[in-house]
Length: 272
Image 1 (spheres, rainbow, N blue to C red):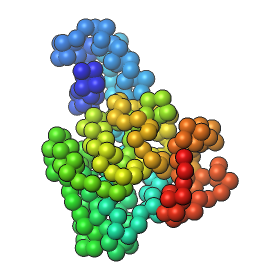
Image 2: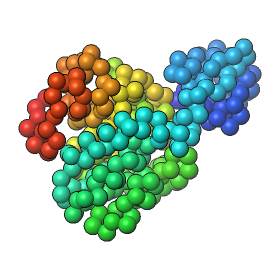
Image 3: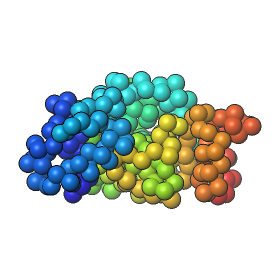
Image 4: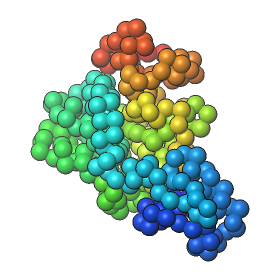
């Protein structure tokens, strides 16, 4: 499949730093035209730089495969998004919390609840919450992805299907009105999609740099989420475009000319 082939190319490029078209043709057993088309698409997303006869890593590839670097990218915006998201949690909620660097910052904003259940694939989320006995934790089992610090795979996907949450807080590497929600990694996308399907209400936490960007693989349509929580860097045009499309955009942006009320009544009374 094209998606799996392109994922293999990115993984191989991360290991070696450079790839040659002839090598890719042999390894993937496809034509020169197909490889060149794959490389052109990946280059258009900033994931590599094409050269004569192959490709080399781009800075985006390093960010994609280095968790510590990724978590500090737009750190202040991610913190603000998580703090805002916490205002939409109520006592007694059962939550899915997705993996990803944005959501790994969320635990510090939810430890004040007396009764809460968190279901997650994220090892950092578990690590941050494990010493709070009033928060009931469930770690979804599966294979461990050390670079993304999360569980994944068919076992994890099947396990998620046995749970039900009233709210899911998920992430994406890209979101656009035309293409929907997308991820750099098909494993992450599959997990996120399962969480969305098994929750009553879905919040997408996404910093503004990812808005109207398409990543490697689409995993859900815009209609699968109920709310988009983003930071103040969202433009006036984007804000209007998404709200006109029927998306509930939650932000403390000055673009709104007001700051939204930070309580659950905002959601309960909201009508698209």
